[in-house]
Length: 209
Image (cartoon, rainbow, N blue to C red):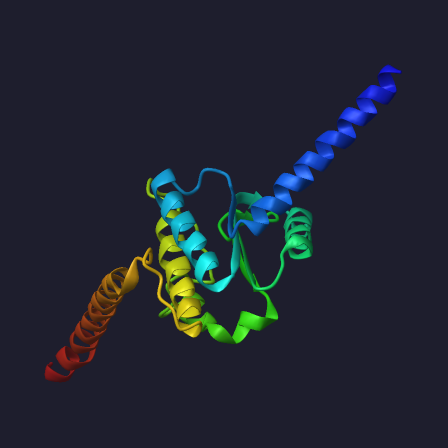
């Protein structure tokens, strides 16, 4: 009798968990993380995600982990893709992937109906992307994960909203992108300066001797 009661409790708990899981996916925005993004940034991401859903019907799931094995990654991917309804965004990020210590994984999955509504290179290009697809985690006190997701997700949602002929009031807008472009330009100018200086010291001085 006790075994039967425990079995019923287990079934009930499973049904409740499944209901909560599906409901959260249908709510428009869902986050599954491990403390890599601070609360302030999470609140902003949720605000953007909820508004995107209200204005376009696009659901978002952000999965941000410290370490994923290949089996864990595939389990997360398959589970969410099975439950999500079109249109959707599934973004899976892990600082460390499989047995690598400095390289993570960063994968974006979307439903077919919105694949052509944004420029993936704008997000993940290592030269001009708001969120680089090649993730290198450096040992430092500051973690770039929160800023990267705010920049990248805002860029993505802005493009999607524009394709639906709408605008997100919660978006961080072009101000952050402009700041990124300024820092990027400054960085490139420094590199060019040192390259030119190196060439002048190496070749022009040699020619005068």
